[in-house]
Length: 403
Image (cartoon, rainbow, N blue to C red; front, side, top):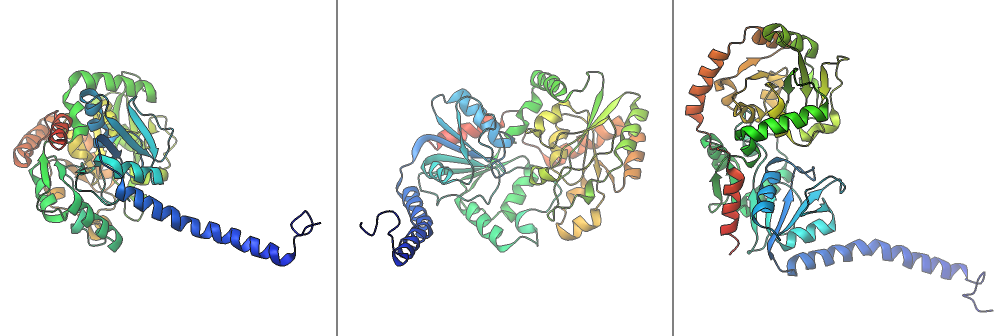
């Protein structure tokens, strides 16, 4: 009987084979990494291919969604790819899902003519000369200090953000003030085009028919009757993951709205995508519901009658609907000292509160006439670029790059 037959393998040979087996699996990632790098370096760029990324693999939404919709309408036959954490998240027909962060995602980005993103530090292959990076960003005018204006940014983020600025062919701006912020704080290269076209995600806020249809759809999906008015609470995230700033007295706020406007109200809470897994615990009140996992904030704007936020650029997006905005910043001093705020927080036309009690008082004494007058004066100052055609103009620009 030979030594390799069953029961005859000697202990030393067993150990050698086991070591070889383990060594193979240890070096395999190295060769896979080298192969991936070689593929991404050598593969050709496909002229009619676009890869979209939304908040590290989040579902179909934000500015990239509306650019994708415009491409589906105008450029049939193009290869459109959406990077997803959950590969089973719904996408329109004509868009391929690929898992975010996978080797396949790297290959897709390496061969795409266009990469459309809304954040600055995703892992991606080295950009080729024939490729175009469109940075849509994920916020318009806001109150928070961002990018190099934030003193607490870590070195790893800064490195990637600088690379993004170097690689960006264009970045989308919503108003004059945002363009200034980009130039000063975003490490953009001298050739980066600032597309002053407004935010694609806000286009439907100018379409009365789309607003009515979307509002009816959202009411039906959440289960809110047509005769009930809606307050949307949409705060931004905290860098330390804290939820202390969200501890409003929700029932008292709803009571104030019902008293002031003499109608039934519900309050919808939607946290920022960065902290969606930290959904707040809502008081046991049937008039309060969570929509933190609702994929498209703009659709929630369309159904809401009023918005409450803190430091989020959502305030300025929602204001495009000519509907009132209230600010309530429970952790103002901490946020200002750690993250930092721009002068816009002091100069904006919205009522500012720093406690639930103060917010209730502002609701009870709210004057639409005074609010409209402040908004008119502010609009003349900030010069918004939003007109309802941002996605169309973004695609127009992309097509000039596809020659």
